[in-house]
Image 1 (spheres, helix red, strand yellow):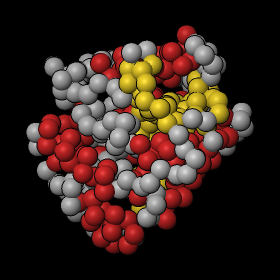
Image 2 (cartoon, helix red, strand yellow):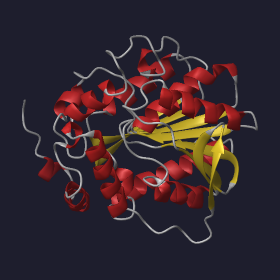
Image 3 (cartoon, one colour):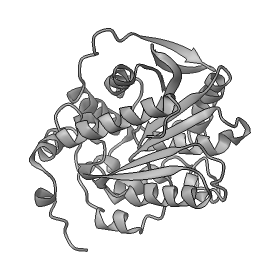
Length: 304
């Protein structure tokens, strides 16, 4: 496999972010113990944490028995599912991202502290996120958003909530892993990408299950669904230097072929987890602004 010259393909601010992150996120992260991976995630997120914007208030409480952090704002709320490969992350790891989302959009943002693998295998994370989503949907319309593993969960629940038509207004998926083929062009071309490798993708796919990943289970792999019709508007955003863009592109192709409105954006030069660089990398800042503008437009009933 040809070595990808990332040093020449990624701009200087992004390379600085990668170098700073590499101090915590080592190349062999996915082969470490679960406790070690969680410690790495904590260190990585702590290093990128930004102060809470003035005027933002949040409350920790349970929704449908699941811990959530609820950032005050107007309706419809954004239900946010964090990344972390289904094994790491939580309310604190994505606290500043959710606070910035609430500030930029003025919307209520609900961050969900779903159970993690391997202590809680699939479908535990799915059960938790669906329970919260159903409880909030019972009060009115919602928007769904998630990055990486959280994008998997958001996509899964737009499929599962067809029995509540119109309740999920739209979804924004950021660098989602959707269960696409691991020999796809992007997965092979960027098998050794900074921030996420193909080996990481394979580990995080498998760690959710006691046995081989189920076939035909759209809650585990949304691309395995056979029906993409009648789903809410979708924005899927990928980082160019990441193994996962083909998942987002395949998802949008399936949605549009079935008549569901969807759009795919591949952010040039960016890497997996780039939202943590939104205050230091201009390209990441522009993408974060695009995400916020899209959520605002969806909330207002506009076409972004």
